[in-house]
Image (cartoon, rainbow, N blue to C red; front, top):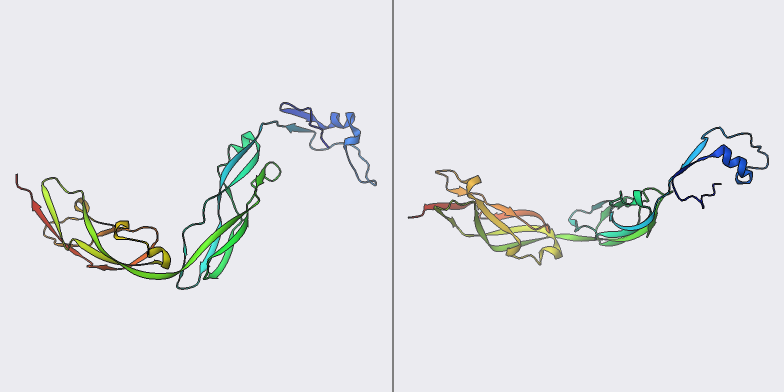
Length: 233
């Protein structure tokens, strides 16, 4: 047993000298007799300031859902407090949980997951477990109508027209999530510099969808006519 109450700075303690000065600090079974210290012959004591810091928790999970269902959103970001020596604590930017595994899920659920202490003998974490909610929804379909087509990278001396100027998208996703989407949540555009070719009239459009959309299963129309007109001076 080491008495480090009087240690204020980093130092090396000779175990042989320590035992000679404090023979009652070595504890043995009654049938065992102490002869000598073989290895190590000394111990380095490092002294550091004790601090507490809040860090994010990375939720580790492996969840599969039943056909026709989807796991929507990511679990809400959680934080815990870690306490220990300043030099080590400052090097930690996050901690992880044990991996939660579930199969064939078709309902939302809440789970308590244990947080892994990256160095049990050196730091303390609070809380040791965090509550995590997972939302599972049935996959639904919906049509978003009248989404305007925008132009990107149009030369200043050209005018570009689309026929038609609006398109509709048939989308899939979590049933309740996609019900709140509107045409303003989608970006549909034609990139002149990247897509235009002389003597080509019909083009597919580019689509940026919100993360709630699982898939776009239909675009109406699939191609639009692009008319390019040179501006008069």
